[in-house]
Every structure is written in structure tokens, then in C-alpha cells.
Length: 483
Ligand code: SIN
Image (cartoon, rainbow, N blue to C red; front, top):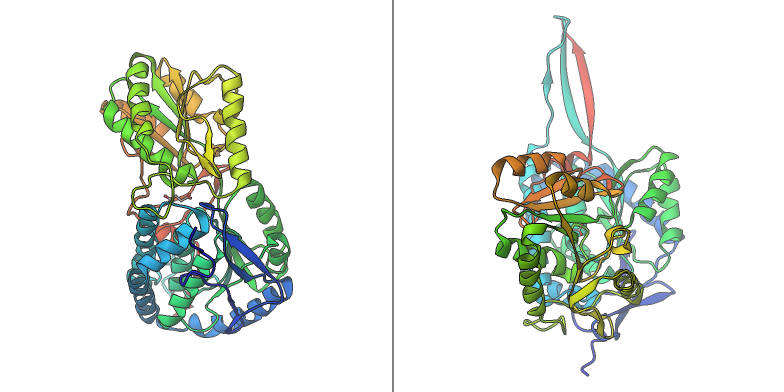
């Protein structure tokens, strides 16, 4: 086995308080494809966090005064550098968290698209003239940066989930301190390096990896100078951050768990619907917040649809994520695999059938799986799976399909396939989800300009486009009396 340790693309030093730093302690980053360590990353402490906040406060004073067009130019250079380093970034993401290399190449484009959109939009951040009811007054609004932002990002999109937060924050004139996921800190460090190379001023984007997320996070949540927290991750951690943010009334954006239903009506294009379930369910081995988690198919077409879905799933190549031929790689870690196995075992024990897959192949590789006859009450119909398993449930009527789809604590993404235009509208309006794909299994693809976020326990706020930018702006109202 060739060694992946200290591969040239790896990055290990933290960046805060104006310098790249080693810390007394470090922690290993593991390649899920082989279980090998790829390097040991700086392990930052609460004291490092306090230094970062002070450095951010100073950096903010200048960055917020930089002409927004100039901020846009720096963002544009950052975007270009991501493309100049596309292969290195893609390899690094695959090494860190096991996503197939063809997908991580796509993620570089996805991550860069948020920067590009914000680079173009930065110069347009302004305000509005407001008519006043007194003749001797004039009113206007002015958009100002929220200030110092603390960001906590996940491992499933190691680049995309950073740029979706950092690009609008930096365009708005905020500065960001980032705690990347323990599984994928190196991509974050690489992005910070490129930001500095693009001309981003010192301490406008600091990155503090840590093996103790709760300890590192505490100083940020307590500090009045940190005016916003933005988080993508589990609903349980999101709830904690929401509570902690209350003490200093921070602005909060939370992009949390999902449990996406995918409805296939009898009038749907079944081949296309099955292809899109495969795309939505098995990309990133199912470790996507908006991945299909439950498939509901109308009885008249259930047999045909399940047959197509099973055939397409069986064709997926499970294997080494560094190979161009691989469609599905390993899951990120043992805890994730245990959860997937527990959900599959629970469904099988209640009478479900695996028409394909159903088992661990080796290591962290779980076979792409389709389950049929999944009993109501099965864990997999309630809990987020974050794995390559598609449970299929049969429904009779549109009303029943909507009731099943909405019967969830989550409200992030939902999908429906139908060729009936009236049904398409009815269903789109009735689904209690922040993102709805009608005959579209990947609504966020190549779409940095659309709102991404959830209802109910799936979160607060939106990322992407003008909605995402607004999250980093305060609205100041200025009223002026005239003679
Ligand atoms: C996520 O898992 O939240 C990101 C999915 C996407 O942006 O498509």
C-alpha cells in the first residue's frame, strides 16, 4: 500500500493571530478509504480561540472600510485560485473524508461558485431610499457588516460548506473565524492559504482545527465581540449553539439535519425518477443533508419503479475513492457505519427485503442498498441515515403521500416526480420543506444564487444568493431632517 502520510496536498498548521502555527498538541486525520493517517493537524485550544477573536476584532476595523468593489476583486482572485489548485483540493478532500474523486472535483466548482457569486455581488451591497411622512425628513437604509463571525463547518462538503459561509461574510465586510470538522480540517487550511494568496488581509479568515469542539467553541459563544455564529451539522449541536448564542444575542444561522422524502407518482417518468433517486441518494455515499432518505412510490408503479431502482443501484461501483471509476466510496467513520447498519438491521428485522446490497463490503464500505416492504415505524423512516441505503414505501393516494412526507421533525429538502402540472403545484405547496425539487433530484447543483436551508428542526436562516448575503448584514436606518 502506498503511503498517504504527509501527501504533498496535506496541510497541518493552524492559521490565527496573523501566523501559521503549530500547537503543542496535534491530532491525526484519517483517510476513510484505508484507515491510514494522512497527517497530524494543530489542535487548537480555548486560549488560541481568544487570541483569534482579538486578532479578528482588529482586522474587522479595516476590512469593513475596504471598498466593497475591492473586496469583490479579492474574492474573484480567491475563486480563480481554487481552479488553479483544483486537482490538489479534490485529492485532499478525497483523502480526508473519502468522497469519490470525481465528486470532489465537482465540489471545487461548487465551492468556487459561491465565491464567484459573492465577488460579483459585493459592489452591489448598498441600501434604500425610504420616503418619510414628514416633508422635512429624508430617510435611507444602509447595509453594514454584522462583524466578527464564528463558523462551524461539517466534513461532508469540506470546501463547499466553507465558501457558502465565508464568501458572503467576507463580501459583506465581516471577518470569520472558522472551526472546521475534525475529519476534514486540511481543506479549510488550504482554502485559508489561498485566501491570503489572493490578497485577503491577515486575520480576515482564521482557521482553528481542534479535537475538542465544545471547549474551543465556548470562548466564541461567551464573547460579546463575536456577533454571529453560523453552523452546519446535527440538530442536537445546533440546539446547543442556539441556546448559547442567546446570552450575547448573536445572530444565528443553522443548517441542520434532514430526512428528505422522494415521492414518485404513477404518472412520473419512472426511468428518470429512478436515476434521480440514485443521484440524490448515493452521491457522497448518502452523506448529504439533502440526500433522499425515504422513497414513496404509488402502488400502480411500485413494482416497475423498484425494479429499475434496484438495477441502477446494482450498477454502482463501490470502491477506492481515489479512482475515477468509483461511484460510491467509504463512509467517513465507524460511528456513521454503525448507525447505517443499525437502521438496516432494524428494517430487516421488521420484515423489509434488501433487493440489492444490505451489507458492509469491507472496512467503512457499505454496499449501495435498496430496501422494500419497509414497515411503518422503522428507524430508517424517522432518523437521518447519512449512508447509501434507499428504503422504499408504497402509497395509495396523493393525500397519503403528503401525510407521510410531512410526518417528520425535519423540513430541509423534499422531492416529487409527476407529469401532472396541477399535482406538481399542489405538492410543491403542501410539502413542509425549505427546498422542493419537482422532477429535480439535485436542486442545489450549480446554484450558488438560490436559497438553501430548512424549516422545522432543520434550521434557521438560508445560505446562498441574496438570502445568504443578508445573513451577514445589519440594516441601519438613517433619518435626516432638512431645512
Ligand atoms: C449539505 O449536505 O448540506 C450540502 C448539500 C448541497 O449543497 O447540495
